Image (tube, rainbow, N blue to C red; front, side, top):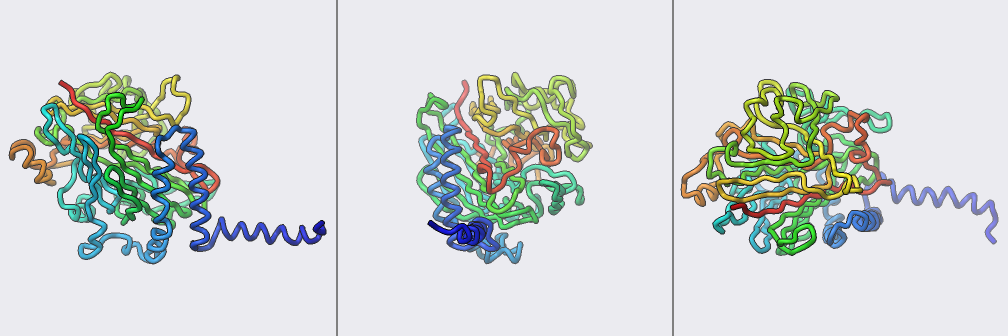
Length: 466
């Protein structure tokens, strides 16, 4: 039997050992190995609870690059600029990767873990690119330096806006860079958000790709976070997709490693289902938000003012898409809805799940849209609690459409991305929920080493209408 005095002496040493492993001052191969096992255990449990098909295998594919990502992150953490691709060099960050299945082909690049193209058939069987962006991957860097549209990127560590660039976690106040409205708020993670980071390709097959990013307190957010952005395409028949329609799936899986911290990622994809055969989407694109009877009220710069509004009772029902209508049907009544001197949509719509969905993070269809011009339809399902809808109100026709899109259109259609020429769908949590605890959203926006990972899961299912 071991004397009690020895046990008493050994316990602090044992606790200290665990503390040094789980809460290290710096990362090491030993620490990364421990976190790999923690990541596997937690995500396997969560995957079984959420019925996430093939989720564990996707996580396993992402794990081999953790050490590589951490090493590169450590080497560059002393300089924010070193994390951003320069105009010369770093060509691998702009390498285009293709994933494909029957009737769907998607292209992505590591810079911002960015979706650059999705080809799907229209009603006549002709392939159309329904994603807004650039043919030349390096143009996304030029965009960041000029218009900064966030075309196709993963945005984070906290998507959408943070009032005053300030939030508190357990009484500790954190300030992050304020990069919008002349320094009044933070947009999409700060001055150099995830959209400008060089993600590492950790797995790539014919039909899937995984990007990984190690965030060692970037943009002054607390703690370290590892994120896997997993994209896949398929046409397999399933209970959720009984007709085997072309489908893109995105899973953004983030693990807080060292501290409690806000995490809310989103895909910032601009869609145009008429593939720029029309000058805008107002009169040919039908939009339905079947579960969004409410939206979050905002001030003139789109910061939440604490109110929750009914779509049917404000702006003459212009924000009511519950039964569906053309994007432009009521746009004349939206002046001020998207901020001061703005007409259009840029709003956070709340997802209210029906009672039959017992789990608050169950995957549910939240968007249905289609183009009468091409016949292409899109259904978006997600496990998130809200979605931001932006109708490209600020586009002014100065950015050209892709030459490949113009070629498919026979040099007809839109040559530039005009106002209301596209629609952004961001599946995410409630905007600035971290500064509005009365909404009860903190459990979906604050994560720690003791919680499950933050998972943003979305599917994009394509079809055609007559």
